Image 1 (cartoon, rainbow, N blue to C red):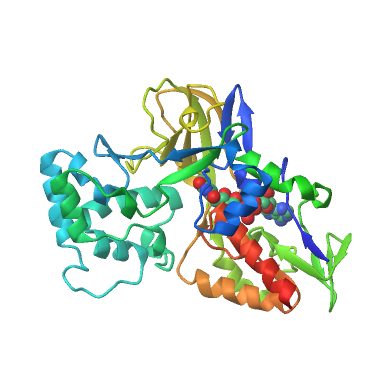
Image 2 (cartoon, rainbow, N blue to C red; image 1 turned 60 degrees about the vertical axis):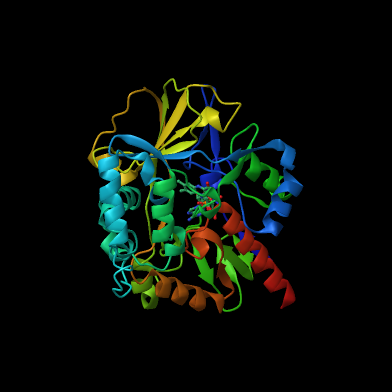
Length: 383
Ligand SMILES: Cc1cc2nc3c(=O)[nH]c(=O)nc-3n(C[C@H](O)[C@H](O)[C@H](O)COP(=O)(O)OP(=O)(O)OC[C@H]3O[C@@H](n4cnc5c(N)ncnc54)[C@H](O)[C@@H]3O)c2cc1C
């Protein structure tokens, strides 16, 4: 038997939604559904039919040097004032890669090498330092498939023709969002058949290995366990395994503060990135523009929790509600990949597996976590 565990007030983890005075607030921050995996679409739509979703063409913006331009920045430089456009373009053309310099190994040097100084200094570095809460020079490059791949010819072409080719965008250009009930509606539909196996509000505090089986919280006995929570939150429960201490220390995550405001808006934007280091928050979401059952004046902001605690959040709206996430993003600090590999290999021999965003400690969106779970089950079935 497998044992899965969760500690939740209601089910859904980061994918939870709370209705606050008529606002559908996704309390883990901005959540939208899309996937490149057909089996994930099939899995989700077989539990919550496609007609229960609205399908949107993504409208995401970036606030850059006082202008609001379309995402992604490198395709939309033509929307900046002409003088700045020229400086950005020169810097893209002179990037390290174009000059034949070798590919750097840390994140900050890598983005500078790839995108040039202007995009880095005014967008990529301040935005990412706000989001992650650490210096980019301390981050690995192994997750960089997540960030834009710049083609200098295309950047110049878009600027001259004053239009970008959206089919080449780095991330999903469309997304699904439940017609009602917020993102949590998906999780509720998926959990319905399994509800008798889900125990809420039950933190794992003790995991004892007895040679061929586990005792969880001195209560449940099981041969196998699938962990989907951050490994470092289990270090004590696992009896503080000193042989893995250095690895557990490399398993880091950040946390967010989600702040709900009321404010009138009349555009169709879904969200906007805010790289300005003078502002505490890094993204703002216009809820009614994607959640039709939410009040028309709801906006929420995501801020890195540590940053939020150091500098007060200022926003020109009426603050309604604030909530802190538990673990939000797994931070790819240098050496994290080898560390999680050691941990997984060590425990797999004992029948304790790690799957998903936290189990594998990777930047996985919900669809990727579902895909990893499907793959895991298929692999185990074959054994
Ligand atoms: C700001 C933000 C935006 C995102 N946007 C998107 C998006 O647009 N689309 C998308 O698909 N995905 C998005 N994601 C990713 C998505 O949230 C995750 O992929 C998904 O939530 C992973 O689900 P999970 O169950 O593995 O982890 P989580 O949702 O984090 O759930 C982990 C659960 O484990 C519990 N827990 C922790 N420690 C213990 C313990 N010791 N004992 C028992 N329980 C414990 C926690 O309370 C929590 O309920 C986003 C994430 C963030 C932070």
